[in-house]
Length: 365
Length: 180
Image (cartoon, rainbow over the protein chains, first blue to last red):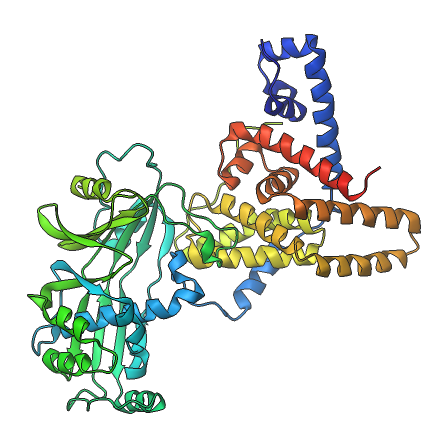
């Protein structure tokens, strides 16, 4: 037989029984393997000696008390992080959030308490200029979570389903190379309230030398309530695990993510949706092109706008599970996603070709 | 020694996430801190690393995740190795430790030799690529081949080879530090 591999020789050092009988017989008569084993053994012994540290005892109870007593300086558990959440990306994310909020609000139907409950998705092109010029939503009032999003990563499937209130989507045949090892993430329902403040908006605008259109009567102090989730997310393949989880740059886009969420709902108090639309689309920084795209959405109350950064992503309409969905990305495998609404909002995305993701989306049961 | 089977750590069924986290913390804290101590040779700093790792884990993951222990082991090794790379601070501390120990009526030559050996190891570990360094530290902290494999995300069959190469690389780095 051939000589023993370096791995086999190393295992032999830890456990003489870790090699097969044939390997042992070969070793007994092979001076070359014996010589390599001697070097392996010497290196292992030296490393073990070097890595020896004085005995230390650690008091887990005391440490746990310290950890739980310390005031939390960390932000609440927001679970999943992707490179997009690096510090340098915060501003684009903030304005993208504004774009979504704006699209949701501005496309809502007239003066009903429930102004947004989408049943379909449509893309809204958003240019870099749009993003750069959008105002910061926080300058128009106060945003507060009444129920914060608290994702639980790595929970058992049954727990995730219990939190979501629906069964985890089941995938059909997956493309070769996609792991069938699934990590479940449960996201309980979250509720946020945005309270408009005329004084805050005017002060922020004045600080930038801008003048805002007058808020419609009843808008100052009125609230929008956004309810999202619960949601259930399935991540296929090894969950990206950075050595230091706070370093989001170490995390990579997984091969495949399948997510389902109850559709978001927005309710308004004290101000009509048409007033909101008029007011928000007149804000400095809203480009005419973006305003036109938002106004062009048909059946706005029931349409979830998907912002598509022009030049960075492409979108197309696709039929998924018999309904119209939006596909983002392309067939390069660099990253793509499909989003549709059929009762729940569904998302299938990852570092696969768009055509593969559409097939997976159609195969979900 | 059983190389293939990760020992089962039984944990009672727990109702809440916080209870699960407390149980995980208390079951794994000693081992997680021990891994960091193996790298840093400083029990107090190792505890800092262990607590940081548990807090990071708790912010992002469920304590009931199957990969919890493996994640913690790997994060402890990597976080400690990262700290090791902040070499100037470490060297200052080891200088101070040498003075302390010298004052305890020990054989000054033996103390100096021990400190020199520790310094060479830390320098060599800091120079090794992260994966082999982590393999060495995790294995020498008493993890089975299966546990090391799970922590660094490779198959158990690869551990013998990785360990062998890591030990050879460590020897070279230590010799480079003090050629004899």
